[in-house]
Each structure stands twice: as structure tokens, then as C-alpha cells.
Length: 355
Image (cartoon, rainbow, N blue to C red; front, side, top):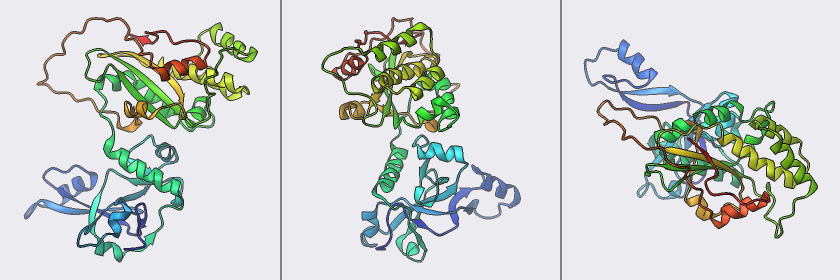
């Protein structure tokens, strides 16, 4: 087993799973249930054509003796259309993990997993699934995220539906100014105030940018002439996300770009429509170097294709009427104040888009 590593690919073109033909859940099982008479056991093994099988088991467990760790987990290698593959590569679709060493449109489908004994794997041809530390690190992060995603409440999912559609439609499209800038965003992280179980929730979306994208907070707050011009442009009239994105792409001044990034995040948040328990939605653009570990722990990543599905039940009791509250204040933590200072102004408590 020495050559095998997590992320490598077995050159096997069939993925297999078990199905009960009395209750078929896939196209293959449904087809079989209509063509096969159930005389014996309704449980069958179904093979699906794939490009290969990707190893999910960690390398250290692969290398351990088969007596202690006899099994290896595999998932299918498949091709996607360019747009979906681009979103998967941007880590926006936790069902898929990019395999860039094998091509830009090739991914591991993490929704389907099969278990084999290590002896079976030794007879398969091995294809290297990664060439650099960054590639395997991103693959491992994708696998971990698939099993750790946060289940956002239905009200939040409905509230950001228009923003989700906007991001999916524009992400990675070079013809779209917003699409170009969304491709820069490393992650979108979400924080609820006071918490997700509260009857009234204020939400903050953090658009985390690569380190060095935004200027650090200066010791003295003095607006330059270019910054003042940027503020005047923003204040002249309501600016759509597309308008801000176009100006940001053309802006040569780094400090003014920081201001425009902040306004663009706010403009994206303004496309949301708070519903139910969600009373306000605010957004910030943050530099990865300023986004603390504590803030990371307190937030959840927003994955566009795995937003919680609405759960409806006829037996559910009617929702309790919630009185119309005031806007939920934004807690003025040191990190939040520091980021607001970058824009030459302090963030006012309660500054958010409310119902």
C-alpha cells in the first residue's frame, strides 16, 4: 500500500452501491425495479459508470497494517460542466472536491462513498491525484467540510435566497464585474446575534478576502483626497452592486478600494429580504489577516448548494406570532470597530437592514 495516498485515484470505471428495489431512490434503481421481477431478494448491487475512484481515507490509515485498518473509502471521479466545476473549485459546493491535477472540470463526488478492503486496492492502477501540498490541503479541507457543514435555519435560507441566486449566476464570469470580485472572495462566513436559537436574530455575513487585499487600520484617521472623492461618489446616489463592482475594478488607489469593498459587501447584503426570525442582515468585507481565529470559530461557512432544505410537516404546530422588534444591534467588538475605523468612521449600533 506504500504508493497510495489520500486523494489518489484508482483507475476503475465503476462505482457500486446497494439498493432495495421496493423503494428505489436513484435513476438506476428505478429502471431496474421496472424491468426485474422481484422473485428473490429485492436488494441488488448497482454499478454506475465513472471516470475513476478517489481515495478518501487518510494516508496514515492507508499505510497502517490491514490487520488494524483493513478498509479504504472511495468516491467517484466525475466530469462537470465548466460553470459547476468552477464553483466546486472555489469551494462553494461541498458535494464536490476539485482534483486540479487531473483537469479543471474533474471532481470527486463526495455524496457517494463505497468501502473496499485494502487488498482490492492493491490490484488497481494508481493515478496521482495531486502534485503539491496546496492541492492535497484543499482536498482534505473539502472532505472535512462535507461532513461538518452547518444546518442553517429555514428562515435564513429564505432570507438570502436572492443573494444566493446572484452569486451563483455571476461567480467566475469574466464578463461580470461582480463575478470577477466574487472569485476573489475566499469564503463567506455567517454569524448570528445573539445565537441561531433566538426568537429574533441579527445576521452578519463576512466576505473573507485574501490577506493584504484591504489596508490595515492606520494609527490616525485622515482621509486622503482620493478617499474623499470615493465617499462623495458613494453618497451622490444609491449605488447598485454592479456599479460599485465596476468602480472597484477600475480603482487604482488601495485605500479607496478598501472603502469600495466594504460598500460592495453592504450592497450584496441589501439584496437579502429578512424573513421570520431573521430581523436584520448586515455584511462586511474582511481581510483574512484581520479575521481572528475566535471570529472564525464563532462563524459558519456559507455553502451555496447545501443551504438547509426547508422541512415542512403537516403535524407541525402553527408558528408562534413574533412581535415586530427594533433592529438587532451589532455588537461593537474590538475587531469590528477596528475594521470600521479603516473606513474613517465608527460603525453605529443597529446599522443594518431590518424588516
